[in-house]
Image 1 (tube, rainbow, N blue to C red):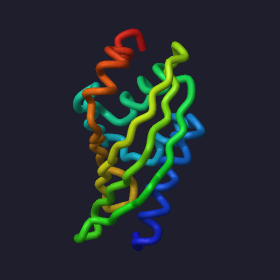
Image 2 (cartoon, rainbow, N blue to C red):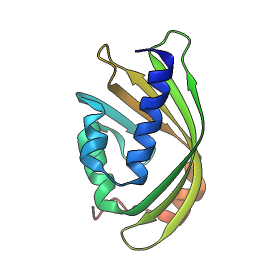
Image 3 (cartoon, rainbow, N blue to C red):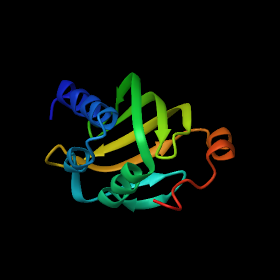
Image 4 (spheres, one colour):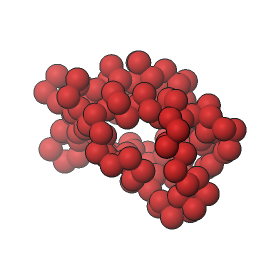
Length: 130
């Protein structure tokens, strides 16, 4: 996959997140791909996004930058997440998602990085009921 295609693929992920298209998001990942989340730890990507979908009412993600890894197998995106939970509570925070690409160009993993202190203080364990 060429660098421009990798950037477009990462940006597509964020478009699908903003549109809450969970199944389409899952299809961007390999079947055995995983997500590492500050809230949920390491999970199968499909399970993670289904859980996120149940916990969320609306998501708006604004990508500030996509950076490619020096060996061509990874990318990182700096974003702002305007997240409305199923309960109606709203939170806005910035983070970085780090993606690894598989040989076929899909995501093999994603690691999520953000300052969890203010979010955890406000959100608590909102995934518990999802």
